[in-house]
Image (cartoon, rainbow, N blue to C red):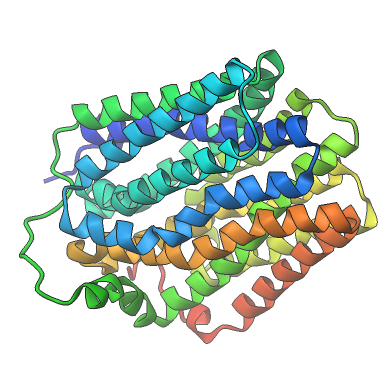
Length: 403
């Protein structure tokens, strides 16, 4: 029996529509957080602290969230996450609106928002696998990447414009997006998990089972290791771009437009991903992305924020193709009872460095030159490229047909 096309899959469309709105809200505040901190304190280091506070829970709570997703109702966990984030971000928006916001409130709200994202993320991939037939996972992954591209394209300029109109608006819009996501989840009919047997293993054993599963696959553990470095580079360079652009005299709307270039390139990359998978071998496609991460070194020669923005374009073009290979591979190999923990294991291992990236960027920008700051991240990118090129596990990576 032929599978229903994704565009006619009601629950898949509902899931993606809700997440589209939610992710736009997240991107709106992604730029609004540092702009708000810079407006209140004029401190790049404090902007880095807020970005760190938002990213830290993605590492801190990833494994417990994955275990919860494998033991409890994934839909209920996702709804609880959205409701909590709606309440806290609304509170910050109201405080900003009333001119009562103080710095300490911002990292607290950012931390709660990050914790909600960790809980939601632990259940999200299991939900997608439940509503999408396995042969359609590569196409579904392309949709996810296209969604990411759209929100990166629309979110930052919208965040910059809203912040320019009123500092509270980006946060109130983010809260509304979480409420919309809650509505889409409530409307879905598919059960987000298979029937489960009660687990009797000790809690610590269950908590670490996802990590053990990833470690058992040479390809997956290598990919996760390299992506861990990527999670230092991208958040760090993203924060650096905002700070450097502000130092070079750009407005909030102009900064948002620069950040949106990455989203536009992701969208193009999503469109060409199916063609790229037929054009080059799996290993070449994966390694190609790793080499693009060192491109920010161009800023060392031409220290313009526009050059820094342009250096991120090749990476954005390459990411959708790599994602459409790596994520279906992991989801196809992972038993349903471990999907939450395996996904959380990836989030835990990469989230730790994602939290460090903006913190390192903020501290470096406050103490050394912009060139030196970007030079540090370019060195991480070069390390990723060399590691991926020399890795035997990636050299023997399976094709999608073999998968």
